[in-house]
Image (cartoon, rainbow, N blue to C red; front, side, top):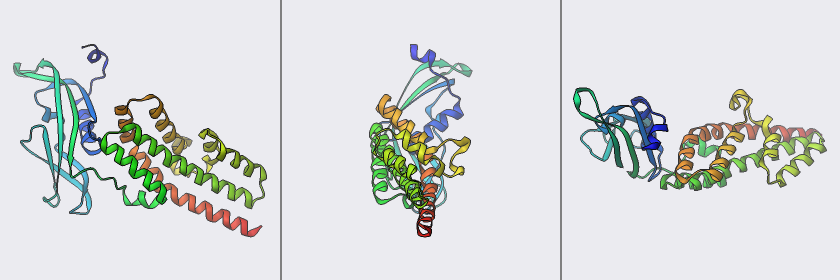
Length: 278
């Protein structure tokens, strides 16, 4: 098969990580193709024995261990309380049979598609993230998570990008308030132009300095990066590819937003103090 020649091969360790992310974060009908550098004799070799996920019984994030002897149906049990379970249904296909050590037949290509999960994936963000978002942003974020859970990658990216854009507008309001307090009419006018512009780049330039340095490794604005990845996905990627992008960026999204709200509030308070002093 031509695509197997050009597709990068992965190690068993990399395959385990990819399949764990499929189980934990993949939406329904998400597909994962794994082309292995070295053939294995069973799919169990590239399905994780342990997962790290929240347990509602223990009320903490802990280790979940795989329940053995399940074919196409994978069950994990909380290793802490031994009561809570989560179940995943996978449709598995494989080809490219190879001869491995001892003369037995192994497989170098696995294709997984996640077709079910119980309990259903949660659409509730982690508490620090939910606290950091406005009510409107939280509603958009939950809709994005719902799209992820149902396998609608394009929809997920659209909702997540909207949250980023709303935050940029909130930061622009902070810039404007500070400029008004200092009598900087030029910046006030620039903010007004940016808020009315369809091009997000101009808005991002004005708010770049308000994003704390701790969130700007290498001087890169994380809001700009998130917006860029979401936009590229919406305009150029397939639904499956958008779903993968949403899953890959979710941890980054959560990290940025749970730390950004305090910055916005501190900047608003500073702008209010400046206004009172004039």
